[in-house]
Length: 62
Image 1 (cartoon, rainbow, N blue to C red):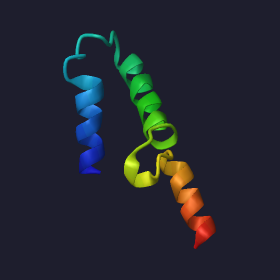
Image 2 (image 1 turned 135 degrees about the vertical axis):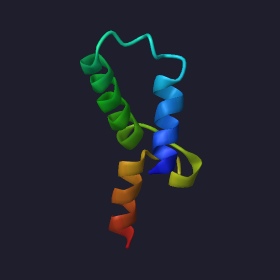
Image 3 (image 1 turned 60 degrees about the horizontal axis):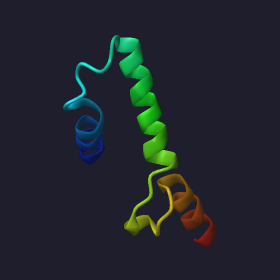
Image 4 (image 1 turned 90 degrees about the horizontal axis):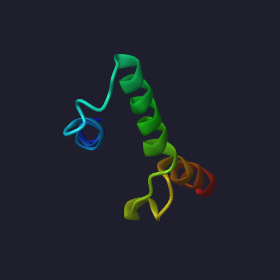
């Protein structure tokens, strides 16, 4: 969790504080980021799959 929130702050907040005109706009941006983080982001340790697809593949192969 600590890593996730650190990444969220670095990628969404720091340097962008004034980009959001309201809390609602910021809230929508965070929800979109969480969706991206879970469903689209790929990395080496998940064999170049998004985390959700990697977990699904791991369950099927177990």
